Length: 158
Image 1 (cartoon, rainbow, N blue to C red):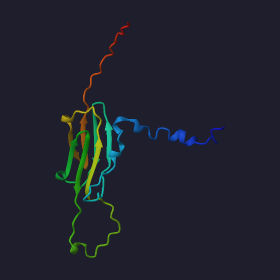
Image 2: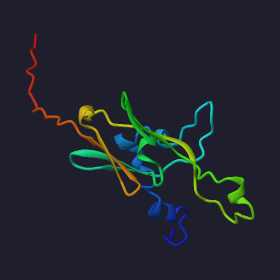
Image 3: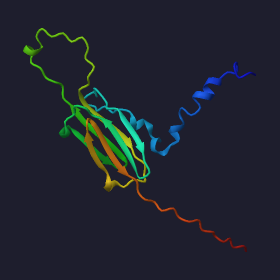
Image 4: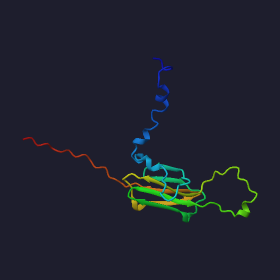
């Protein structure tokens, strides 16, 4: 059958590796990238997150523009890294809103939480977080694991 009419040709070329990232151990539990909601309150927004692997560390970068430093919390429980916080709405009095018409309201406010399962080979004591220009960066150093040499085991015959 010709390449032009072969069914699935487009999927072979463009989508073959689409889900190959799911085999990577860093992304194994990809459902942890979904926003969480608590029982008491619905989550109104969720920051965008980048997960980056470098030679010596993993980086988690989250967009948190407009969230005050004191409202951002980073926790590690077991191998789950959680970033949570709250961006308060700009409260305006009824007087200030009088005569105001909102044609579009796209900015997000409220509480958020993102949880990410980290790989096992991390240095938990070395985790650091910093925030600059609305980007929270959590640096998770990798543990240095020495590669062991292969050892030949003799087989005894009876």
